[in-house]
Image 1 (cartoon, protein in one colour):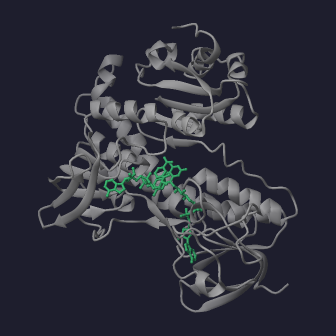
Image 2 (cartoon, helix red, strand yellow; image 1 turned 120 degrees about the horizontal axis):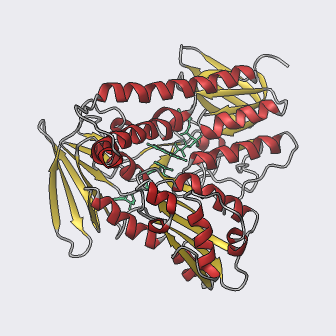
Image 3 (cartoon, rainbow, N blue to C red; image 1 turned 180 degrees about the vertical axis):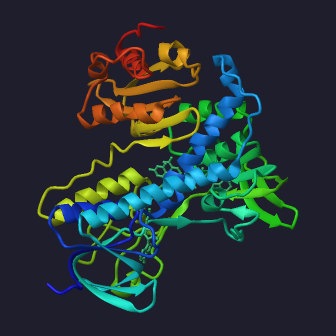
Length: 469
Ligand code: FAD
Ligand code: NAD
């Protein structure tokens, strides 16, 4: 085999692409990964999950030091924010983790080709190398894992100064006086929380009637109230129609959905967080005849193959939630399939977590979805105010809600708001993957004192009474 011939060429090194490349190499396939940026890890490691979680964690400690430490008997005189050091810590996390992927590539003998990839047709990828020149790679299998990119509203340009995307919101060099966030999804609420905790006034404008579209209605409403209590201003039913910037700031104009009147807000920084779009620029999809849907996502069949034989796609660039773990699991399943093994992703059981304080976590169906489908169900709920560990830690906001089939008791959905919900949802995911009933969870021994006991109690509440309520 010549140097330029591979079993698998992956385009894009985000959680979908780099994980697919590693598993393909582990399966004995000669693998290359083409990435336009010098660092590996894609959106998630460079400008997404990792840097945002670093800032969420440090801003949470900073706020807790001001508002919660005294109650625990810890004095914090002279507490100060060193934003530069906070940013440096975030950058260090990114460098360590992207470096970790580079290490894994070397270990698994995956060639990392730095440049922009485009598909010539089945079996052939051209790379415009970042250092100049080009290479043509022969590939038995091509995996498109080019992810997604920031998007804006019509007529509003993200200038990176007054109007920033999530990427800009991760590198602000001073705490804005007033930040207006357009969109009450995961990005808006996570990045809004960061800057609120660091001292900004934050106003979220959300088009729908509650934040976090797609989540369970009860969770959305009560979580919105919790954020308001923290000082986040949230205007729902507010459709942003324009932003004007000046040297001094920006003015955001929105229409109220209820009475269609136009209102405006002045601020220092606008964070545009209205969703992301699949990234396929310059890939050659049209030339090769690869089908995309109305949202620009690459259409794939059950085995992630596009309509062109030997060309596959995974992650944010195809349908489904834009989540790192979904992209990773698709990468593993596809790389196993390509090696003649059996790869599998259960798309019905993909957890979703919003890393605010409290965290929001969910898996499976919402009440609204079950009502629409006409499925009869029972609900069990348990509040953290009655959980001993949450009480001891003074983090009693939120609840666990389990929805189970009325006839079979099979768990259909689990929804949580709580300080440790992001970790706790794993139990619910595993339970659903194994087709557990609410009774199975209730009969499973949970360690005391832990937040997870709230899951057991919510499961009890589905068919009987919880103990501590
Ligand atoms: P990406 O990570 O987008 O990677 C695609 C890569 O392909 C990029 O590096 C890009 O440069 C490269 N590329 C594109 N075109 C080409 C080309 N032609 N040639 C070569 N390279 C190319 N998800 C979670 O699950 N949890 C979180 O906490 C979370 N937080 C987030 C926070 C923010 C601020 C953002 C923006 C996103 C967050 N996400 C989170 C979403 C998550 O980042 C994505 O779902 C995930 O990165 C998708 O992985 P991917 O491999 O499909 O694509
Ligand atoms: P989103 O789709 O989750 O939320 C966008 C919000 O903007 C929606 O609520 C929508 O109703 C609102 N909106 C749209 N147009 C509007 C307008 N004109 N005026 C007011 N509001 C408007 O998108 P996002 O928050 O930008 O996140 C993008 C992707 O990144 C998501 O798919 C998400 O899954 C992923 N992400 C995940 C995490 C996580 O897993 N913790 C964190 C960040 C991002």
